[in-house]
Image (cartoon, rainbow, N blue to C red; front, side):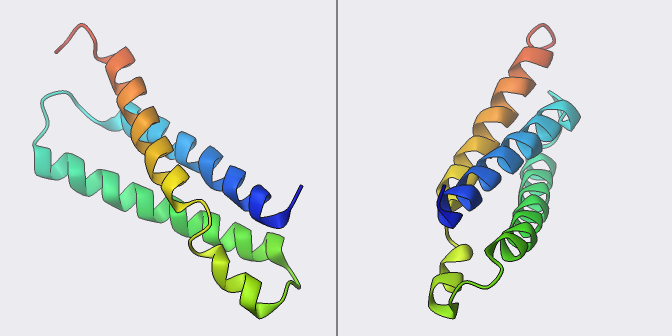
Length: 97
């Protein structure tokens, strides 16, 4: 498996974990601004964690390929985070909405 594929799947898995955590901690009748803020902060924290792990995985690859580590898998991260957040939130709070 290519190094970029490993990083892509790493970010997708971390986004699923972050989205699940968000789905559990968010409340059904919370203020919208709080929900958006918490989602952005948790997403950024998990993305930074994925970047640190990606730098360790990348190791000794050339610098021109290392620059792609920042953006590799960013859309998968965003959409997996949102998908798991909504899915877990809906499953947990389906009777209280």
